[in-house]
Amino acid sequence: MEPLELHISNFQGPFDLLLHLLKINKMKIQELRISEITNQYLVYLQSMKEMDLDIASEFLLMASTLLEIKSREMLPKHVEEVDEEELKEKLVLRIEEYEAFKLLSESLGQRFSEDLLIFTKRAETIVQDEVPLEELLKGVTIDHLYLTYKSLMNRQKEKVNRNVLRTRTLEREEYKIEDKMEELERILIQNGRVNFSSLLFQTKSKSECIVFFLAILELSRNHRIRVLQAEVFSEIIIERGADHGRESV
Amino acid sequence: MEENLFSAAGVADPMNLEEYMSIVESLLFAAGDAVKRKDLQQILKLTEEDLEKVLDAYEKALSHKGRGLRLLRLEHRVQLGTKDQHAPYLKALLGVNDRQSLSKGSLECLAIIAFKQPVTRVEVDEIRGVNSDYVLQKLQEKGLIKAVGRKDAPGRPKLYGTTDDFLIQFGFTSLKEMKAEHVLSEKFVAMDVQKKALEKEDIELFTEE
Image 1 (spheres, helix red, strand yellow):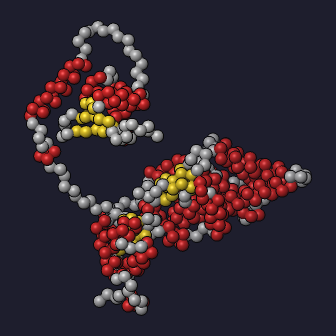
Image 2 (cartoon, one colour):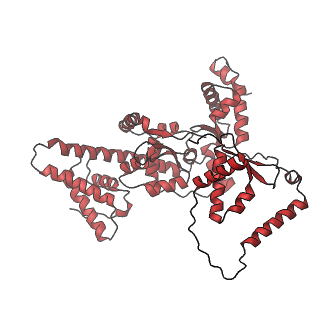
């Protein structure tokens, strides 16, 4: 056998290697002679091993397919006669299909390298008038800012540890959105409406707070509650929504 | 004096075609980006068929030697683009770098997806005989392919298709044009058509927003 040229790593896959072998043997795909090809294929795999290349499992799968067809061909023919022909036909078809797409990919690549660039414009940006700041801050006075600041500072103060030592058992925080949804709906059935901030003050931890917030979003999405705010930065009020009585689906 | 397409063809002008062509030109110029055919239809109050007639006529008018634009008739959209033969001048003006070439594997995947879309990764793998996961991911990052739907098969795999940008990058104005210039042998086209017909109900395409 003539020495094989090695440019193994360049093969895109087992079909690529098979096509290459067919080409150097001047064999048409339809006339695939399994036993010859199998031997050469295995020599390739062997040299890949010697070069310490990782042999992709796909190459091994193909090797076993080839060996299977070859061994069936060598066995005396009996009942299973059709089988190996069928296997071979399938293989031939797959090589043909691969070749067809390989050719297409080469001509596409050729086209890509010709750089037939089509230039297009970006989407035109149509400038929308922004809401002016005066509009946004309408009715907000320094008092509002002061009160907001004060309540924020108070909340911050609440969080600070005053005692150096404190023993407390930390319970595992497990809050479910479903539970919080139920809880909120129970509150609403009792009270009719509730302030968003008072809900948050009741929460014991960040994660509970987050879960509560998600529950509110979920309920408002289902129209089971309504969320209102009279003006920017004012209290957010939650009431029962149009669908509060209905079971969600 | 510009030649009237209708007088030239000896056909009566049934819906004031030139007027429509001129509106389409204005719309496409102002939008810049690709415009949905549906939007054009709605704005111009035209049926799909009539819009295509207007686009045909406009495309023909642009193909005139003295014009520098071409009509890109992408899958669901249309857009104005420059003529590909002017690329060298445009590159000189805009100082575009040469593109990085695509790897053999990427091109193989692209070819398979372009001709067989919508297609799953496994179907691409089967043809190539190797796993194409990484390559598909890269192609998606480059914006040349995108998920266009899901297949009702185990794992509900994604179906891939090429993007408008793919066409533009390769200098095609439509998939039709690509298939006319690069022919896949009939045998495989037939096989694909047959397979698609069998799986018709399993293919679930995302709606184009």
